[in-house]
Length: 152
Image (cartoon, rainbow, N blue to C red; front, side, top):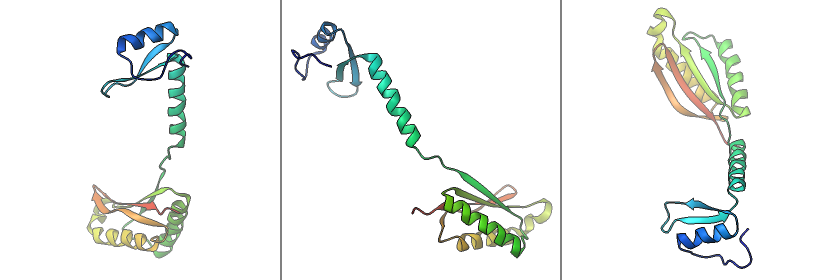
């Protein structure tokens, strides 16, 4: 953008403003914290447009974390456990995080140890597909454990 008669280099701020005015462009501050501040002579609207475009591309590339839930009871049957384990494995293969929890209704809170064992067993059986991110922890009437998928 800079004309042929202007050299790229370090200029005092007043001279940089003059150059920008001569070229009918804007003086844009790129890095204000640098000493001396880094500025660029460019079309400001075009600069903003390119900056927004870059941010949009970065946002599109960012991965979105999906969290899937699986709910157990403290006395979950063997068949139900296997059924839910298959779902857990498919969620982890898809690349989603898994939130497995045991919900204690009413007085079933006395079976906390069974809930803990159930979650640890699940973690052990899906070990090849994901790793435990957070060990089972009791929060209110729920015992929660997070499992994240293993990278391929």
